[in-house]
Amino acid sequence: MKPTLIGALLGAILAWAALSYGVGGFLLMALFMALGALLSRIAGGRVDFRAVLDALTGRRSSS
Image 1: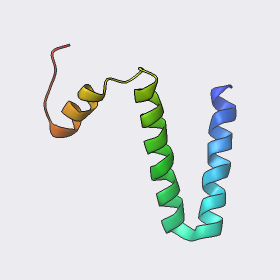
Image 2: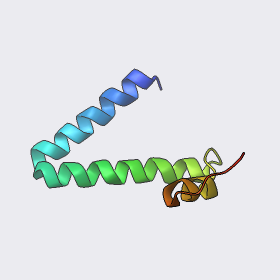
Image 3: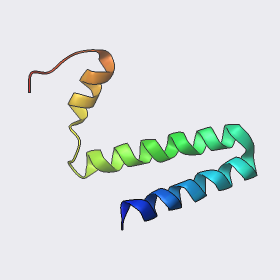
């Protein structure tokens, strides 16, 4: 899929959530979408989970 098409689809989904469930539903859906994207990248081996944890805790890596 092209990035433009993916962006438009995600925008439509988030707009639907905002219209249907209000701001709280919009924020919750956006959070779950981001979490799902991160977990799929970790499962696919595209993101080093330890590096993400180190970045969140303030530790730095030399690699």
